[in-house]
Every structure is written in structure tokens, then in C-alpha cells.
Length: 494
View 1 (spheres, rainbow, N blue to C red):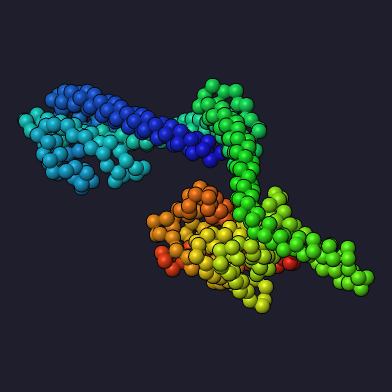
View 2 (cartoon, rainbow, N blue to C red):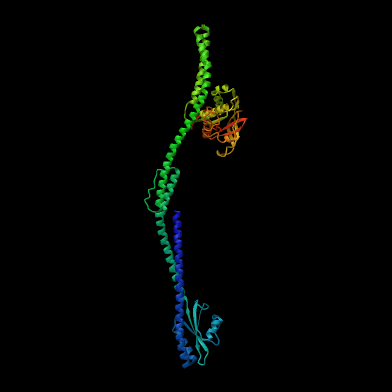
């Protein structure tokens, strides 16, 4: 309701100013009219007295004219008449008149003045000169009238103006408040509540203000905006679901690509135990009873070895929902190297994992982080066609997140994958995480491995740093949040 109060205050303030100005003009006009009427009355009375006193002075002398003034004064109640000799002015009259007024009076001109030196207050004085019989001005008649009635009339006018102004302001304030609350206050409260509801996520409610003014237009605009936001939210939800499904498909495709690369190595890995199983099976046919148990144990051992290889490959290629749990990154790195153990041998390379005795635990999805490490190791092996070593270091590392990631410096779980291959040119470093960007030969890669790794690490609220120099190799550091307060192995839905 503050808008209504402000509107009411401005309107009432303007009305009060207008009424005050009109009242001041009315008081000023009444004062001018009253003074003019009083002056005219005194002038008319003075002219009549002058004519009468001149006639009396000519016939009966000055003394008779003075007695006429005294007699006339006894019969007056409001106007006071007094004979004033001009040859020697009384001190009160002399102090009341200025020098130019005394000169005018001696020159035969009437003089008007207002003074307050006699009770009961201000009085208006008019001095009318009476010519002497031999010429010159012998005396003057003083007419004085109190200004109490004038002051009272002015005060009544002022009080009337103040009362009218206050009543008008009060009536205007009440009408403005009532209309403001009805036309502005309540609709604005409804609009504010609706805006807060939209901000809180309520996009289904509607105001339904059936008004044809600006408030109604704003209400309809809010309703339309809520409908558009609801449609946009539903569209974003559908698009987000589609994006998540696409990302999962890309990740699965990347896993299948790695599985394809591992197929020949797995076949080679399975060849040796299969030959052992076949040979031992032939031996069983002709073996002596004392060697049967030992041969069966060897067959069982090789079968379990083949089963483990196939299970690792199937677990890696299978699609599954994301679930966060506390995992030891050193163990994940070791498991990833075991999965890829056929690739280093084929490329005359070796992969070494270095991890501290104390587990470096992070809150991650085990299978997704294993996919990240697998992609980085495969890239490192492909960067060394003539063989070499790939080093994987697992540690706690203090680092500052990059500008786009945000956050203060702190301690992170870090997995470093370092190769000694040909390195990456600097103009390509900024693009290696773009989907389908690759500098490898045809058949070596699709450009999805690093993009999928970046996406997975970002979803884990981490980041990947890259250092590379042509001819010396590349270093990829994966930073992941450390696990705090969660028990190892406890699964948390992502």
C-alpha cells in the first residue's frame, strides 16, 4: 500500500497548496476591500465635516466649530472626533505623523495614517484641515476608527479558509485512499504475490483480473509469461532428458570403441589359457589317476582366468545408471590398467601405477571414472607408436580451480596420466576436448574419448589440466573432489 500512500500524499499535498493559495488570495482581497471601504467612508465623513465646519466657522467662529466637533464626538460610538490645532500639534499627533504628512496637512490636504499607540490597539486616523477665516490652516479634525472589526473579519476569513482546506484535504484523502486501495493497492498486492509465486516456481496459477486498464494488461502479461515459462520449462526438461540420453549414448559408444580396440588383445589373452585347457583336457584322457586332480586344478585356474577377462570386458561395455560412492582412485587406476593390459604389450609399452599407502578416496561413479582413466591411458599409448612408458600417479594435491570452474584453492584428489610421446601442438591444446576433434590417423580414434572424459569429470565437479610439449610428451591431471564424511562403498544416486 505504499504506492497508494504516496499517491494520496501527493494529491492531498497538491490540493492543500491550491486551497491555501486560493485562501490567501481571498484574505488579501478582503483586506484590500475592507481598507478601501474604510478609507472611503472616512474620506466621505471628513468632506462632510469640513464643509459643515467651514460654514460654522464663518458664521460662529472657530470656537463654535470646535464645540460642534465635541458635540458630534459625543454622539459617535465607533468613530472618534477630535479638534486638533495646527499651530501647535499635540505630541501624540506629532509623533504619529511623518514630516511629509505634516507638510501636506499644513498645505490643506487631508492625511490618512494607521497607528497603534493608543488602546485598545491599531486605529486608522484621518486628519482633515479646516481653513481659517483669514486664510491658512488654523485647525484640523481628527477622525479615528479602531481596526478591531477589520482584524476580526480577517481572522474569521482565515479560519474559514483553514477549515475549508482541512475538510477538503480530509475528504480528498479518504476518497483517494479508498479508490487507491480498490483500484491500485489490492491489484498491486495480487500482482506482487503472483510474481513471487512465479519466482518460487508456481507457473500453473492464474490471476484472472478482468480489468481493461493498465493493471489488467499487466496481470494478463504475467499470466502469459507464466504460461510461456511453463512451456519453456517442460521443453527444457524434455531437451535435458534427451541431452542426458545422448551423452549416455556417446559414452557407451566410446566404451564400445575401446572394447573394439581391446578385442584383439582379449583374443590373444584367451588364446593361451584355451591352449592350456585343451592340452590338459587331452592329458586327462590318458593321464594316470594321480595326475587327474592336478590337471583339473590347472584347467579350473585357466577357466577362471578367462572368465575374469570376459567379465571385465563385459562390465566395462555394459550401460548402467550413474551412482556416486566413495572409491579409492588408486584401486580404480590399477583396475583400468588390468583391463588394458593387452594394449601395452602390443605397442611395446608399459604402464605403471604409483599410489600412496593411504587410500586417496573421492566421491565418484566408479565406472565413469574408470572410463575416464581408460580413455586417457589409451590416448597415451596411441601417442607412443614406438613404445615407451605411461605413468599414472594418484595423490592428494592442493590446487586452485580454473576461472570457469570457480571456488577457492583447496586440496583435491588428483590422478596424473603422463606419456613420453610426440606431444600436442599448442594450437590444438585448446581444442582437444571438443567432440570429434582428433589429430590421429584414420582408424586410431573418433575424437570422442577426451570429450567424454571432460564431460564426466565436469559432472563430478572436477576439471582436467593439460600440459604438453611437442617431442617430449603430454601430462593430463584429473582433479576430483575428495570424499568427506562418507563411508567407503556407500552408493549415493547421482
